Structures are given as C-alpha cells and as structure tokens.
Length: 80
Image 1 (cartoon, helix red, strand yellow):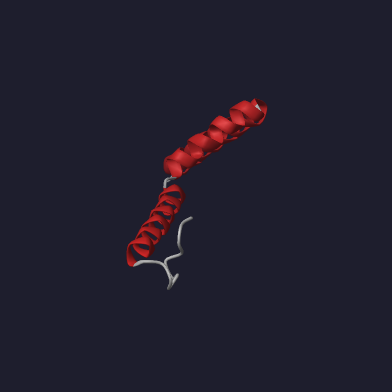
Image 2 (cartoon, rainbow, N blue to C red):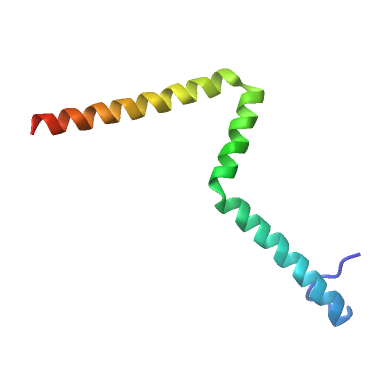
C-alpha cells in the first residue's frame, strides 16, 4: 500500500517515496498535455481505425482551407 505524502504515521522514507510517485504522475500528465504532436498522432490513429471516412473528410477540409487561404493571399498581393 502506498502512503499519502501527508500521512503523519508513515515513515519519512515512505512519505518521500509517495511524494516522488505523485510528482512523477503529475509530470507525466503535464508532458502528455503539452505534447501536441503525440496527441494528434493518437487521434489520427484512432480516427483511422474507427472512422476512416471522417478522417478523409477532415484532411480534405484542411487541404481546402490551405489552398483557399493561399489563393486569397496571392490574389490580394496581385491586386495591389
């Protein structure tokens, strides 16, 4: 059984170990939240397995947005 870091009856070593485990879990959660490329890869893999049509549609919409934005920028630059 793992002691809580604030458990007064536990020995200092046990409390220190519990605090280390809690810190490690917190750092893992922070790393996961900040690692956007990894989260995107996980989501793409899940979408590919669960609903490949939705994934294809999302890619098509993204490509369309980039092409439209590029076209609008070029058009604006050529008019001025």
